[in-house]
Length: 426
Image (cartoon, rainbow, N blue to C red):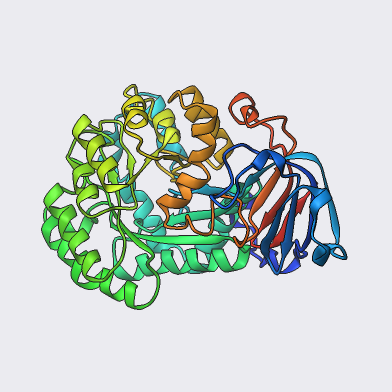
């Protein structure tokens, strides 16, 4: 068994219990442009955020703070740039083992097929995840999650998909729920049973899809572990027809859907996502013009994943210009997973989105705030600053949002307010 870094198996603890309340008057801040909701007409006039009962109670100029808040604690923002809490809307955070050795093999010239023939690839992660105890999965995922939280993430999606049997998929999703409770962060759980065909169903993909639709999904929904359903629609995974079977099962259970689509080829996944009004379609390097139109008409968010593009050394970019011209909302995410995107920095991915995919600074920031929140169905509570919303915001030691695209490496966080608590403060 490969040795892992000590932090990967650190003893998990409920860190959120020690955080002080953020209730008070947060003065001397600068609101990043276009990060407030529709209740705010002039964000440039705001230099104060008032938090009461874990909620944003007021936004405005310090000179106009209502008398009701006069006796509340004062927090000096020191002129920091304020943004909504960041949202990482696509991760596979809970899994056993890692595949660093396989990555080294690929660098040395081994093909994915050669690695898979020797028991590597996703099968190795499935094996390790099945063998790992729930407590080990929780401890290792907790350490990974902390890296993202330290950079201002206030909401995150966590997928299953490395169990491929009911017991292990349940274990992954239960760990995801526990992570949200222990770390005081909004976690949306996505059932990705249709991620790959498990070894015991080799050559019987339709039978496995039946297991996903008829047994696994209904049981996990009934147990309260599923916020959304995802499928990997691709030539190496599940066909459009098989994808629709899973989406039809989700629709019967009134569960929203998402889709891994058009990563390696144009399989028509975007049209399927649009047909079922998917929250998002993700990857999209091979998205066709017809697929762009379908996403636009359905209001589906396009989630771009520059980390996987970078690690896999892909050369075909998603059609950003076409998405932009059509007005399709664009989100970005880490896609953290052990095989193709072992990245635990949303800030790094924000930089990559600009340098690799040519997103503008406003597009990049929207991609990890309001559009990412919409991709998780959390747009009414996350991704924007507004009165009545839960207090999720970050104060940055940064002159303007351009710094997110410019710097690579620093974590310029002054303070993080997550779910009404001061999660960290410089």
